[in-house]
Length: 586
Image (cartoon, rainbow, N blue to C red; front, side, top):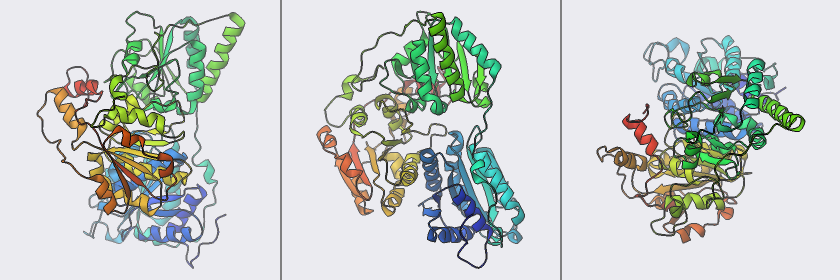
């Protein structure tokens, strides 16, 4: 049972905070304000007892992104909060991003006191005004207004449970300030560890059909999405048993050893030609393609390319929702992926041992590239080029080797996506590479890296790579890393333009407009905020950076990296999709 609250009256805000403490949540990310003040009061009392505490972001969207990063690092729901009115609306982009990427998050917004609903009170966002609950309806797994203090506990439990169901995502409860202040008189009396457990069912009939298909097939390939994380090691083991080459989507690459001899790179946005050639199957070798944990969205499939989405596909997933994008598949198998793949490993191993069944190797041989990966790089010469200005290919290739094992890399939307997906290749497969491609919000990575760094409590190195466009949107959040003494390294790709916009316009034949940012000295800007910074213009200056020393600091460091704006990122398929000439979407 929680220690007594250090005040005479136990409020419902204290009750809410007690639940967070029992869930072992460390932080609530938010921005204070009048209506949410009772929750901040309760968090202050909790902090004095060594419990969950508030982290004040500089903008509510940053708070939601921080909660996203915290959830990615811990596996527990990230928690963010905002006051009523504009505080709540500012959260929306971060919450929608978590919804699109299935990140568990508890979102708490305040409301004006109940008697003021609909009376044009300051920042009224009740159902009689701008209706913040209505706004959150389409980007949450659970969404409700607490209209009476006796509803709060049941709705809080429902919200917490919804964050971890399949598919995971954010839950939102909106609480009037008078409800937060109301006297509760009791603490949680439920086993909160049961609230975030995952329930899983497996389709045994479909699994038997999958085994039958594998027994009849000779040549199998894998396509791995971001949802394969819990079974990634088993999937790679099964691939070895089947001599099956495998590729990933842009987000799925973080769950595989990118130097594995059977890995052929990324298919989809910023992908590798070796991955495309495997799935194109021009020689008619492939019998089956197993898509695992794959949402089959636009960026992960090159705009739903029929090289992947065809009758050879067997779609294996824990989310039934994903099957709606593979209606032509030969088979759908739904269930808990670790159980499914352990069963497949056991059965295939038995077939090889007992019956001498074999699956011949058939993947075309590819020489190892400069990263030690067996995938074809678009421009291998640029990856090792020492010219000035610094090539972005050279930067990400260097980071692949220079960053210590266990580094959490957060990459912002824009050209940073393209360069990192294609040229940042690591043997680690624990999910330390983070991009948020569901919604694709610029400036996500800055705050998400801060939330993750707080979660790791300095135990793991953290790097954020962001474009200058994203940084200009949210540069102020680096002061949170400074205030919390986080040894975060933030790399700004400084080329003076919105790179994805500029190159997209050029590749697509559009008007050249709206992409210029002008030259900004981001190192000087960081110094003005009290943050250490280094300007980098050459490969030699890049190689002189002592990352190990930066990760030992008690505070962030900004690297202002001047890159060559004229280097064309590997994003031609995306541009075709925007034009509508090759694929749908946009």
